[in-house]
Length: 175
Image (cartoon, rainbow, N blue to C red):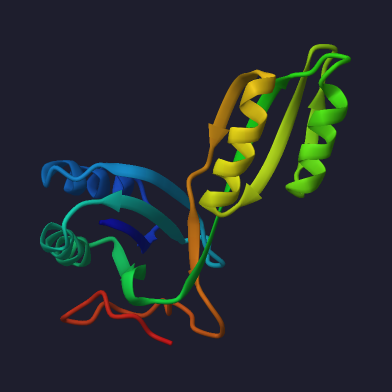
């Protein structure tokens, strides 16, 4: 089963290493990991996507909540949320393919962010299915290079992950 987890942490040296170690120690692969400062520069938000069974994930969530630098852990499993990721794609662009690339970028509401005589670098954002569809269509034109961010996620509506002190059970979602 696929899980998207948001972890609020103190923005300090070694926190990422401890969290990654917790996953690897339990034999859980991290499919993607995005980390950035929150509104408060002393706190970072980590979005972690992983797959595995619910029993092991429950143990990981409990262990995450015990880490000193972890403020809040939320598994989006039972929460309505939005998720987006970004992909940069460098594609072959010659006289025959440029118009087709421009049409695809327009259809997918992307942007061309760099142009060279033989290549375009494209920026596309969206959910996983949108990016998958775009990459499937652009692949026959010749992908030279590809970089993805992995998803970031946020609860829908006015529901927010509050930055409050950990509770004894930890990991509860506020809204």
